[in-house]
Length: 269
Image (cartoon, rainbow, N blue to C red; front, side, top):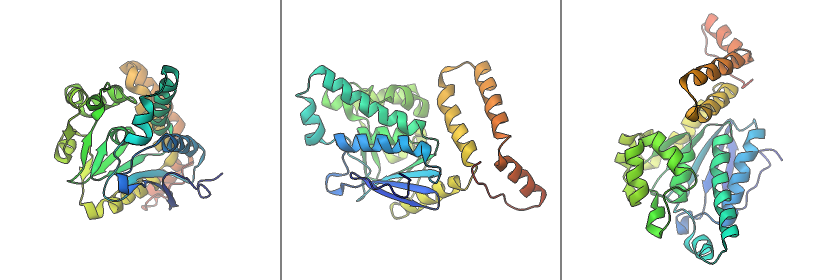
């Protein structure tokens, strides 16, 4: 199946001009996730590895909210009745969604409005770039339902975005991070007007889609892989990665465009 033929059951999907748009689409409940939508999202981000026609991704929610996280009645209720093997299968599956988001080569732009909590906050965290509105409220509220803050990679990723102390506060208390705090702390790349949010996110994704797609994938891979290596190893990894990029046609196109005093047109190869 190609990206153009993809027809998901549990969220909205669109593809235009190299930008794939995923819309969490249960606005009457503030776009909660279910067992099925978790799995379908995971499978989609895995498939994006093989869909070069999608060069960047916008992830958003319908109805003025991003996501209220796991559905209380369709997920949390059933979880209280599961045995340990079933619970572990579930938590591994939700973690696989984050792995798939980090593993797909396309840059992911999260367009955040209103409620962005629980697993919704995790999906925002797992994206590469985050645009928000002044009314965006983000909370990693696992501790408020009697669970640990270490959910779906939060203890690994969140401190790298906003710092250990700030991440500790959010994960221990489950309190809401305001939009202003999110921007000041570096969680949000910038705040935009609510009525311009999706247009701004689409424009940012389109600018990324128009760039050197193969090289963007290398950048994302290195951002992931260099978390746990020494500086010497990181520099060697980047030397090898950059040498690979220097053999792409996009590198040649950029040089030829510069020499001809025109803008390059990248093709992702």
